[in-house]
Length: 259
Ligand SMILES: Nc1ncnc2c1ncn2[C@@H]1O[C@H](COP(=O)(O)OP(=O)(O)O)[C@@H](O)[C@H]1O
Ligand SMILES: [Mg+2]
Ligand SMILES: [Zn+2]
Image 1 (cartoon, helix red, strand yellow):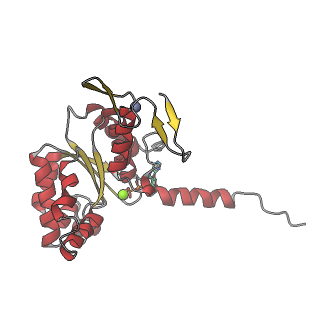
Image 2 (tube, rainbow, N blue to C red):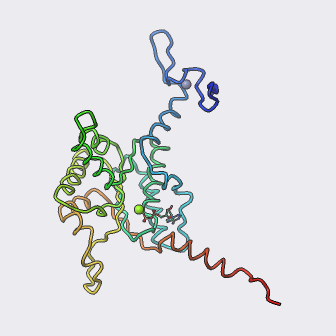
């Protein structure tokens, strides 16, 4: 691709289309070769992946010696391969720091790069804050529907940390609207949650008290069963594990000899 470095030194402009993405010959207009690169950059920007997760990819996801992580990675890769022929979503369920968000972000990175579909990372709590702001500001700011537009229309969304927000009728109403709209329009959702499904063993008090169902309600939970394949991840908190490793390698270092 013929690129010219702009006067400011850091931007590059395509020589053939002048950065418009179009080449006009007579009355016809064609996409310039640089267009797909531009589209990719635009999709990346619009996906809104937080800087904290920008490193996440399938390539740097470590799954050695843990069948549940291996399975999670495999399901994530299959999902990408099958999209959009299969639009069923995924629901990653498991403890804190086990790599649920990492896998979800890895998926949308791959979908953007290989399928050119639009993707959006949504932190549900921030979304609710943004919506609340529209109630306070004057009519000049974005409306609630302006904010919900991309949430409803984007091809693939990640709803990260579902159930973590404080639930109220208002919150469940918004969540229900999003989920039902996407269900009706066959749009894909990738969900991560720390809340589990109820297990049969009654002795497990932790699981019996707070479940995904108790957080979002029976109806929404059952709608998610229809929309998403459940991927349970049972692994150690990755951050704790790496911290432990660091600590052991430090204590394993030879100490100064005492003479
Ligand atoms: N299996 C893994 N391989 C590589 N990095 C991981 C793995 N699991 C988690 N991480 C990293 O640990 C941090 C926490 O993971 P995250 O996906 O946010 O966990 P969760 O969403 O399950 O709470 C992230 O920086 C992530 O990149
Ligand atoms: Mg997470
Ligand atoms: Zn061009």
